[in-house]
Image 1: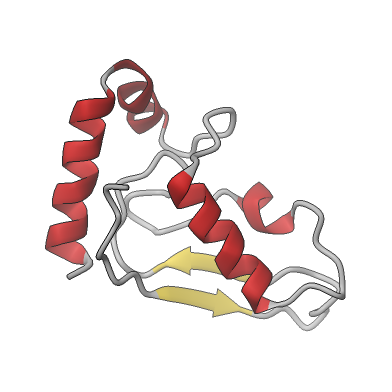
Image 2: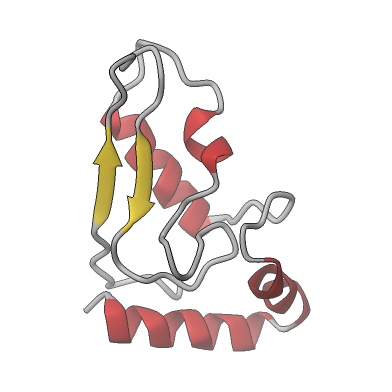
Length: 106
């Protein structure tokens, strides 16, 4: 993965309805990824909210984020141009994602 070796900081905000409502999660570290807004760090909400229930916890959120880094959801990109690059030229995508990881997540 082009994110291997990176250290990524996250911001988790827990709503007053937690654990019945999922926390809001965003990257504080810049990430080049189709499901993460490059400027704000916003993560596609479906990743966290899908199947959320009161028996789930922060580990579920972190696992979902790890999974999306490994297998992006190409049906719901927040960054369509990055998704297009990933689909059409995976090598260039991987290089840019690795460069961002080296620059911002070291």
